Image 1 (tube, rainbow, N blue to C red):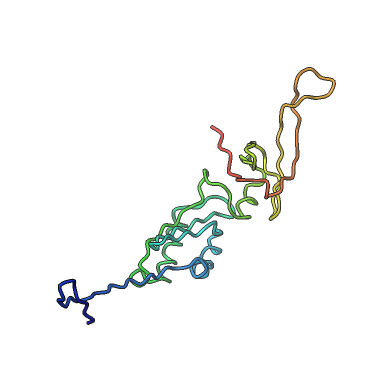
Image 2: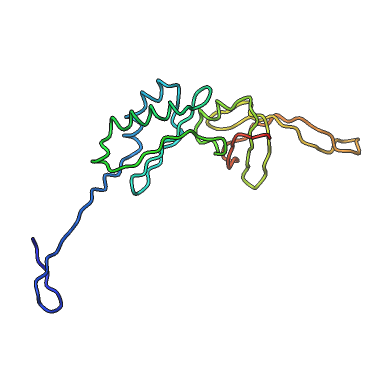
Length: 177
């Protein structure tokens, strides 16, 4: 043991406690659970890892909804691949949720034919039917009251617009009550 001297010249032990950072990475997690994800008809939306190794895996179903059984199964697969004592992690497996914006192409594809809330850069918001989506853009159908030439009152006009993704802040499911 190394010794340091205090201000009075006495030898005092110097202790160093090292905790393995053991921070996991998203690639190794994705590789470990991808087979189980695909087998259940799911896809990964997001994997978040905090500085304390608190891991949140967000999944979505290709068709239908994510069930509790889906989350429990993915949790079990994860725990079978990673030693909790060695990695020192906490784990949450969750569905994407209806209030969260879409993050991956699979979510956009799944939402085609449904109403979505689109928040544009510049502050404009609209509720529209998502009719198409790819890596570069979304296509939406919506109606808006507009002035029509030769008419005194504004009329409803239907639009089918292709919006580049660089003009979009977020897209999320539209919930009607």
